[in-house]
Image 1 (cartoon, each protein chain N blue to C red):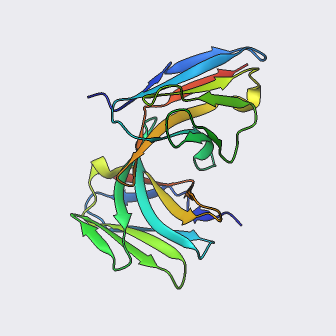
Image 2 (cartoon, chains in turn brown, blue; image 1 turned 180 degrees about the vertical axis):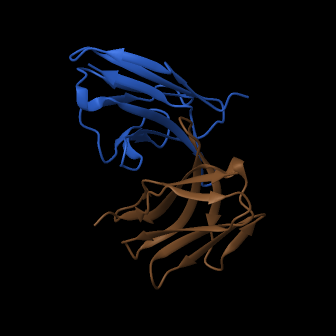
Length: 113
Length: 110
């Protein structure tokens, strides 16, 4: 089982729609969680961190469910410019110190007119 | 303020050739990373550095070497390129818990 799993999509949605992605992680010791956005043939960029109580940034809402070991990203009122691949990133501590970031393979979103 | 800069952006190599990818940062970050990204797989960590003069192996280090002689530069070397090393390579630094990536280097090994 992969440490971080995402539905690769693509999710094709009309402009203005609400869309949600889930990401599951296998290691219960995971400590922090992030969503990165990656445009086609570009580098990943941080979209938002995911906090235990859930957090919102404009049209984007991130949630964490530790009991079920998943995080989610909700995008409201989708824009054409939201078309990208969304990467789930999970951070956990390592025995002996340090930490490990694990990237999901990404979920592709296509917003259409 | 360039952030994280990778050179070259594109390169085609023949099997057995060697090359070096350069990552330069002007963010004064201690931590630097080299990742590779392949279709159907998440970004995978090759090597990383927690400061000038230090390097450590990531999850896929075989076939690569790195050096961090200066804080602002992190070099990734391929001593004898193989077709399996065809990939997009990203350098990243970490600051404030966030990763800042370079634009990527597309390497093809024939």
